Length: 309
Image 1 (cartoon, helix red, strand yellow):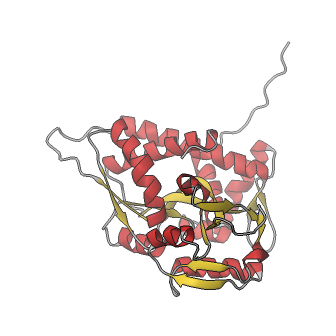
Image 2 (cartoon, rainbow, N blue to C red; image 1 turned 90 degrees about the vertical axis):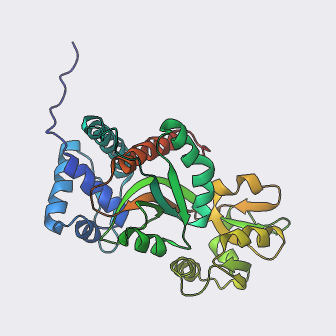
């Protein structure tokens, strides 16, 4: 005779959204602010979820709140659940009148991610829904993307986290950041952070958000690289690396097709950045909702198939 199943109180969508927000914003305070709720309410919801699942989902203490391994698993499943809910809502939404024009999805992204967007996700979306096009606009950094969202110039931004509190971010996938160097550079693999001290490096322009991210990394590593080129033109970076000018930081997934002219090394400890879809909190057009649903499914497949672009 099989053992009786333990009864669980219903896990609510709100609890799942709160847990995802903690993962995205790195803490209860920032998550509560982004969701326009109070910290006690958010904390009580997550604690109730932990009681029902009988497992700790977050580590609590001074500084940044972190998810446990079980918390990471629940967040991944929560994305799948919420994507399913969105899909159901999309199926139940009445289609637009036949005379209504189909507008393109206006997407903004950074030059590096635009490579993958234009070569991968956008063509697959076009095959999936040939009646909806995606217009891709490149911006120098995520701050420019956020401003374009606020101004209504784009519908959605594909960029890395975090997003400011007045916008929302739907996490898609985590990418490894690697050191990309000219062929023949003598470095171990993986390479310690401290090895960037004195290393000829190609960096974004001073004063940009991306440069601030780089500077924070080098400060944490206690390293002072030798800056040989400063530019926000990402297309020039890889050309400079291949020409032996210096090294750069880039996503591993984007290096593969250039492996014959550059060398990519993991960091020790590794560096990862999470990519997501940023948008305003206004109601989304049906075309944009369709793109969201497709992007979520595509990112789930990518997580299940290592190496999938």
